[in-house]
Image 1 (cartoon, rainbow, N blue to C red):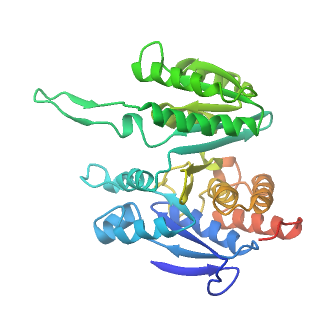
Image 2 (cartoon, one colour; image 1 turned 180 degrees about the vertical axis):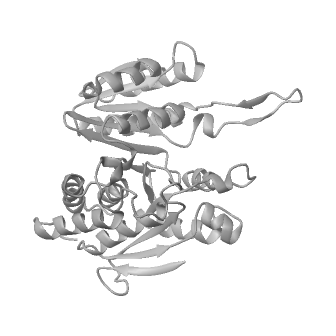
Length: 349
């Protein structure tokens, strides 16, 4: 564990606390760039780095150690690098168990996945703590393995309200994605979302099946504004949306609840094949930091400035996944330089 402060030494009564979980693979490398950029922004924070994922399994035998969980609960926001890797494949204890456990413990049921490029500007709003990933599972005596998808109406209502409120601040369109022609859970999903829509008369609601939505995301993504979906469908569709707007290296996410800290993390995995080479793209992590500033610390001014700097760095210092030759650190240098070269009026902290 490492504790440090950004912008000021020590912590004032008005400073914020960030629990930083670098994790595995390229996670520590992109996290380093995020913390370096944060240090160049005028925000008073205390940063506590903690073991998580595979690194925590190796050190402590637990992907989510009690000390890490307690620090996350006490923080204003959680910044997460990446978890997982082949070295833990087949193990009874896996890094991903720490991530699923952390989401559940913090109650972050709303996963926001922005995807924008050119004339495409959409957000996937994914229910994060229900459905197939959290349902009953097991093995029957005859060897059959099962995973259960379950949803309560209350779980659907709260994520639907998130989507409608977000759409009301954007273009006013919610596309609710399901598989209502086959699944009972999807028929419940469609019914509850339709009922919630009555409370948002200024927002248009469309229902769509997940298979046709996946196709339309590839062929005509600019027709979407807010995509509302359950856990498993959202996991898949958000990666499709990232792919059509530049790739996973650019994609960020925010996982939010009704109170307490959110979790902010890039969409990409731990990429163990390039870990340690200095070629990882930190853009997704830096955009996740911008989401943290916006939703976790209520510093939309800094979030806007950082998003603009990242967009410029993508053109000025592209990493190999974007067809360039810039290193992870060089991309971070470009972001820092853009922030310094283009100061903008900032809100009072």
